[in-house]
Image (cartoon, rainbow, N blue to C red):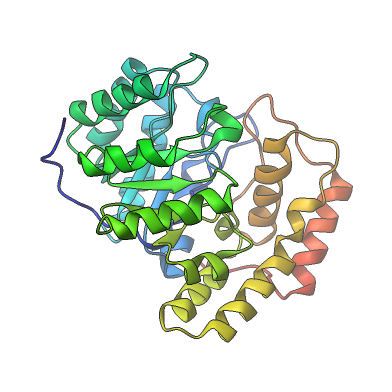
Length: 314
């Protein structure tokens, strides 16, 4: 088990960085650099590279390394970066993670094994092997909608107790489970940093004691999340709620696409919003994800315009 990794704190607003693409599907590095600058200049506390919002599953390992290199270069050490090593099994995750660590990211996050059918003991061994193979902190990514298995409270606290994982990015959709994890973490002396992926209830989750949020919608509207978290940090829950409600009105863009896949709906809406605001040059989705039609894009643009979320200066 790797116990030598220097702790890196991820707290506050840590957006999952989207991956801008050119019309031919190649990585749009210029737009990616502009996106990173937008996020950091908005006041975010860290960056989450190569997650679901970053469409990491659609890219080769070489492309993932390219994306990480651009994010690291554009960040220039201003905020810490956690990168997703998302693969089928432990051995493949270790290969990917080591390459990402070489780019200069500060931590690695991964899921339980995918496709394989493993017991909790086997999932524990999976995380232990990955942690032992890398020289940066390892995080657990709890996202059963994609992995089809839930990381149990007992497993996470066991891995925390043994120093295997430094934190959890929770996208389980299980608010009761996350609240129990928060309580167990506090009872154990807060060994884990706990981030939520729930974008529309950040004010409430901050009140329960989460360390931070990983909001995909921050790619479109980062300053609102920064103001929200700042208000929560100083205990101004009225201001936090007001910021959350404003964010939620803008988040309606995600509900405009109809009849498409989850990736096309969520990330597609984000990319349409980012393009409308001048953050990225194209709203191209990773193949074979469908693009949004012109009518849907117009609805998204109208929502943003009505909330004065126009072109941003970067």
